[in-house]
Image 1 (cartoon, rainbow, N blue to C red):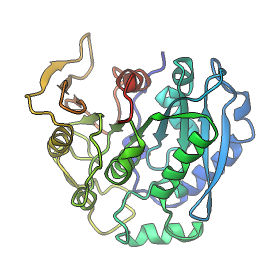
Image 2 (spheres, rainbow, N blue to C red):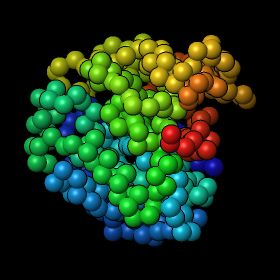
Image 3 (cartoon, helix red, strand yellow):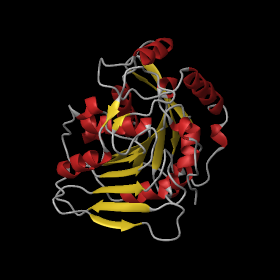
Length: 318
């Protein structure tokens, strides 16, 4: 079973120089020429294209060899991490289809997601996006992706799940705020709630949520505040909620009134991983994996693909 290994935190940062995004897109084009040879218990991996808000957008699709529609996971990459690397390192490229799931890995323009509040874009982000025709509507893109997957008979509309690493985790929470009704559950890995997004976050429905965060993350600080400045694309500070505030917000949204159950991940681990489980709740569960002294990476002890599949299992959109 594939596990996610240690990764340099600067590779998962979503605020790096724009040339990294150019490299990501070039690599994506190269990938499209040979991904058809991939896959074991799935049909051949495919680069798909669609038009969203007047821009051509792409995503890598892995699906079972059987006929659909299938429960579907949309997995968002971290900043300047390519879709094929996200597919392989998450393990979802193989384990998803093997368990009867389709998995879509969409590509953010310039290798990042527009997780900002509308109109509040850092100057360097604006500059970087000029090469792509202006600021992208990633909320619209992900909505169009859902419609594309459902319309083509790939996704079961009642069992579509959204997850993301780092910058992809920010985007996952933004989608939860504005279009949570599209998804049956979400997974946020090394991400957080941007203050400006959270201030206007009013999900229409409860949302089952799984979170993984490290208490010593130098980029997405567990205690909240200004995101780590290494490689930032903005001189304007960007602040996130403390992780405890995000958990409390999700617990209130999901009607979790009882105190959460606390345990630790069993077995011999190089890092202590605490599990804070709010379930059952009136509407939906909230589960936090807190990596004590963990940085901006998912430790090998947590198999991302299996973790997400176990959590998403039997979650159905209300």
